[in-house]
Amino acid sequence: MDLSIPEPFCYDDSFDVGVASINDQHKRLFDLINNVDGNRGDGAAVKELLDYVVFHFKHEEDAFDRYNFADKESHKQLHDDFVAKASAVAEINDEVMAFVKSWLVHHIKKSDMTYGESLRGME
Ligand code: FEO
Figure 1 (cartoon, rainbow, N blue to C red):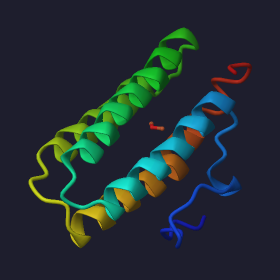
Figure 2 (figure 1 turned 90 degrees about the vertical axis):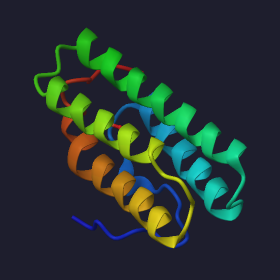
Figure 3 (figure 1 turned 60 degrees about the vertical axis):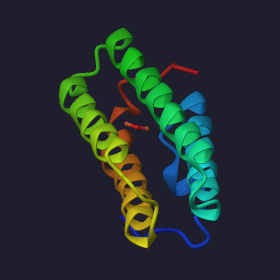
Protein backbone atom coordinates (compact mmCIF):
# COMPACT_ATOMS: atom_id res chain seq x y z
CA MET A 1 0.00 0.00 0.00
CA ASP A 2 1.39 3.38 -1.04
CA LEU A 3 1.00 5.76 1.91
CA SER A 4 3.11 8.54 0.45
CA ILE A 5 1.64 12.02 0.26
CA PRO A 6 0.65 12.72 -3.36
CA GLU A 7 2.43 15.65 -4.94
CA PRO A 8 0.50 17.63 -6.04
CA PHE A 9 -1.88 16.81 -3.22
CA CYS A 10 -4.83 15.48 -5.22
CA TYR A 11 -7.36 12.67 -4.92
CA ASP A 12 -6.82 9.69 -7.22
CA ASP A 13 -8.37 6.25 -7.63
CA SER A 14 -6.10 4.74 -4.97
CA PHE A 15 -8.35 6.54 -2.44
CA ASP A 16 -11.57 4.95 -3.72
CA VAL A 17 -13.45 3.46 -0.72
CA GLY A 18 -16.32 2.15 -2.83
CA VAL A 19 -18.96 4.68 -1.73
CA ALA A 20 -19.59 7.55 -4.16
CA SER A 21 -20.75 10.17 -1.65
CA ILE A 22 -17.77 9.51 0.59
CA ASN A 23 -15.31 9.61 -2.31
CA ASP A 24 -16.79 13.00 -3.28
CA GLN A 25 -16.34 14.25 0.28
CA HIS A 26 -12.76 13.02 0.36
CA LYS A 27 -12.07 14.89 -2.90
CA ARG A 28 -13.46 18.02 -1.26
CA LEU A 29 -11.17 17.47 1.74
CA PHE A 30 -8.14 17.37 -0.56
CA ASP A 31 -9.31 20.65 -2.14
CA LEU A 32 -9.91 22.34 1.21
CA ILE A 33 -6.53 21.23 2.56
CA ASN A 34 -4.87 22.70 -0.53
CA ASN A 35 -6.85 25.89 0.05
CA VAL A 36 -5.51 26.16 3.60
CA ASP A 37 -1.98 25.40 2.38
CA GLY A 38 -2.18 28.08 -0.29
CA ASN A 39 -3.75 30.71 1.96
CA ARG A 40 -1.78 30.44 5.18
CA GLY A 41 -2.98 32.90 7.77
CA ASP A 42 -6.51 32.86 6.35
CA GLY A 43 -8.68 31.87 9.31
CA ALA A 44 -11.74 31.48 7.09
CA ALA A 45 -9.99 28.78 5.06
CA VAL A 46 -9.11 26.89 8.24
CA LYS A 47 -12.67 27.20 9.54
CA GLU A 48 -14.10 25.98 6.24
CA LEU A 49 -11.83 22.92 6.39
CA LEU A 50 -12.62 22.13 10.01
CA ASP A 51 -16.36 22.54 9.47
CA TYR A 52 -16.21 20.22 6.47
CA VAL A 53 -14.14 17.67 8.39
CA VAL A 54 -16.80 17.57 11.10
CA PHE A 55 -19.57 17.28 8.48
CA HIS A 56 -17.73 14.46 6.71
CA PHE A 57 -17.00 12.50 9.89
CA LYS A 58 -20.68 12.73 10.91
CA HIS A 59 -21.70 11.51 7.45
CA GLU A 60 -19.50 8.44 7.89
CA GLU A 61 -20.55 7.82 11.49
CA ASP A 62 -24.27 8.05 10.62
CA ALA A 63 -23.64 5.46 7.91
CA PHE A 64 -21.81 3.22 10.38
CA ASP A 65 -24.93 3.23 12.55
CA ARG A 66 -27.27 2.54 9.64
CA TYR A 67 -25.14 -0.32 8.31
CA ASN A 68 -24.01 -1.67 11.70
CA PHE A 69 -20.32 -1.29 10.92
CA ALA A 70 -18.53 -3.42 13.52
CA ASP A 71 -15.57 -1.09 14.08
CA LYS A 72 -17.61 2.09 14.35
CA GLU A 73 -16.49 3.01 17.88
CA SER A 74 -12.76 2.73 17.21
CA HIS A 75 -13.19 4.57 13.91
CA LYS A 76 -15.14 7.35 15.61
CA GLN A 77 -12.32 7.66 18.14
CA LEU A 78 -9.85 8.28 15.30
CA HIS A 79 -12.15 11.04 14.03
CA ASP A 80 -12.47 12.61 17.48
CA ASP A 81 -8.70 12.52 18.03
CA PHE A 82 -8.07 14.26 14.73
CA VAL A 83 -10.65 16.99 15.41
CA ALA A 84 -9.10 17.60 18.84
CA LYS A 85 -5.59 17.89 17.38
CA ALA A 86 -6.65 20.02 14.42
CA SER A 87 -8.72 22.34 16.60
CA ALA A 88 -5.71 22.95 18.85
CA VAL A 89 -3.48 24.14 15.98
CA ALA A 90 -2.43 27.73 16.57
CA GLU A 91 -0.53 28.40 13.36
CA ILE A 92 -0.50 26.85 9.90
CA ASN A 93 3.07 25.92 9.01
CA ASP A 94 4.89 23.20 7.05
CA GLU A 95 4.79 20.78 9.97
CA VAL A 96 1.04 21.19 10.41
CA MET A 97 0.36 20.81 6.69
CA ALA A 98 2.49 17.66 6.54
CA PHE A 99 0.59 16.24 9.52
CA VAL A 100 -2.83 16.99 8.04
CA LYS A 101 -1.97 15.61 4.61
CA SER A 102 -0.35 12.50 6.03
CA TRP A 103 -3.28 11.94 8.40
CA LEU A 104 -5.79 12.07 5.54
CA VAL A 105 -3.78 9.70 3.35
CA HIS A 106 -3.28 7.19 6.17
CA HIS A 107 -6.84 7.48 7.44
CA ILE A 108 -8.49 6.90 4.08
CA LYS A 109 -6.19 4.06 3.02
CA LYS A 110 -5.85 2.25 6.35
CA SER A 111 -9.17 3.00 8.09
CA ASP A 112 -11.83 4.24 5.68
CA MET A 113 -11.01 1.45 3.24
CA THR A 114 -12.14 -1.10 5.82
CA TYR A 115 -15.80 -0.06 5.77
CA GLY A 116 -16.33 -0.43 1.99
CA GLU A 117 -17.71 -3.93 2.34
CA SER A 118 -19.96 -3.05 5.28
CA LEU A 119 -21.43 -0.01 3.54
CA ARG A 120 -22.00 -1.79 0.23
CA GLY A 121 -25.13 -0.41 -1.39
CA MET A 122 -24.71 3.04 0.06
CA GLU A 123 -24.66 5.80 -2.56
FE1 FEO B 1 -13.28 9.68 5.66
FE2 FEO B 1 -13.12 8.19 8.53
O1 FEO B 1 -12.95 9.68 7.43
